[in-house]
Image (cartoon, rainbow, N blue to C red; front, side, top):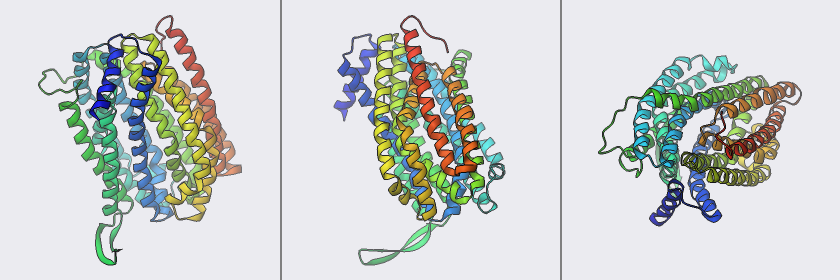
Length: 478
């Protein structure tokens, strides 16, 4: 493990030191950073998958109660991620330029800034939790559970903010291993907490012996508590490692102000604001999709929620590669290495499209099996499998959009890509979904999604070519 870590550190030092890198070294570094990043992303979605599976065993209403607010949880999660990226990209640029003192100063300031944002997000989430399911047009049978789930989720947002920030900072320094290990730990803890919190006490028969397994029997609320407690444990460990053990960013033994400076906040705002608006607009569009799906009935809501969770297993590897792209492009860009910036962008986008293309094949043929692990309800299973097979065709181009966006984030270039996401989602997907849903039901909503993701991939690839071409002759603007 140490040999592997030292090799990664050596390859990263070539970027920061302005030394030449062979094509094989570049490819090796991409794979070394992408592997742990993909595992971290997969563990995150597996945690949601486990929640969905355990809650799914309680019936369609329980599943629909979580599915109804899932897009809103993504909205809050997206905003928290955007805030973290605004600081972690600055750290990546500073590390790429070899200025570790500045990198640690930005880290200190980010702890206060992001911490305040996480608390504000929690207060807002708690305040709207009682009204949200009704705003989204949920059935009266699921609104109470849906509100309770979101209330608990919102209460843990400050801890989730620290988890996301700490992981982002470590990845910006090139340390993908620790965030990945702790993400897997969070997944395991979620399973354990859910097992005891969701289900009531029951008799277990094992190896011929019978015993009582204790349980809180909290149902949907238990799923929220399980996830929140897992986030609590891992956030503490991850933040402690960042501040005391990180080779490049540890704060132990250093003195410096934690108060954010105007320059750091301004730079963070330049990166985070377009991303935050884009995440809000994108999740707003997802919420509108939920509003389109809600009148289709509880079966459609549950099938839509489960299918989204299942599809996430396919596109999360793309986000893992995008994390690696952000780190490598960010450090290369900060070091002024235009040659490496272009090469790492090309390698990561190609890798993401290849991986998600393969995952799309798996999704198409495995859709019925995947859905059967999420729900025992035949109607939900069948409908979910059908829409997943529609979506499978979009996976390669979806990867292009995801990884290209990661490249742009690494360069601090977020405004135009955010506008592109906004246009694609609202002008293409929602327009088509609203038109097709009355005729085709949930299948029409997912067909609209497939068409839009292919369109988005094309425009992001065109944008990437334009940005890299400009980069050869001077820094492009946002």
